[in-house]
Length: 154
Ligand SMILES: [Zn+2]
Ligand SMILES: [Zn+2]
Picture 1 (cartoon, rainbow, N blue to C red):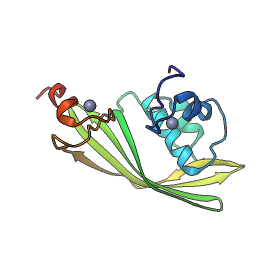
Picture 2: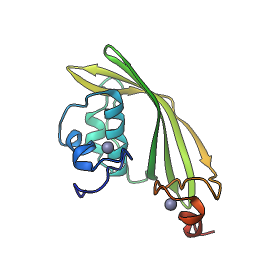
Picture 3: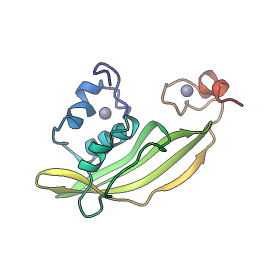
């Protein structure tokens, strides 16, 4: 990952000032920051980071990202924190075999030894059907019709 690139989490900040330091071992200042860094890790297929930021109670033994879809954009709908518990409600957009889909989840995060960790959440998945004048789900900021619509292989 080029450190000067915009961060994959869509914060509008460069990777080096956003999720990059967390991937390199810095402590996440909030559940939302951890959530963003985990989304970026999914984009970058960094399974080691995903496991490290997962609460040991719910952490899987291993994580195989080889079949994972192409995650394109993250929308944080709300985030909240009280004491050592945090909740982040988000929607993550992905592309798989020419189709757009989304995963929506209200995730719980717990602080353990001073570090936020992903605990659990119940994801809901659906198909995304962007309108021609909607913002392109690839995160470019352009309208769908002026962006990926014509390259979708339809
Ligand atoms: Zn980021
Ligand atoms: Zn696009």
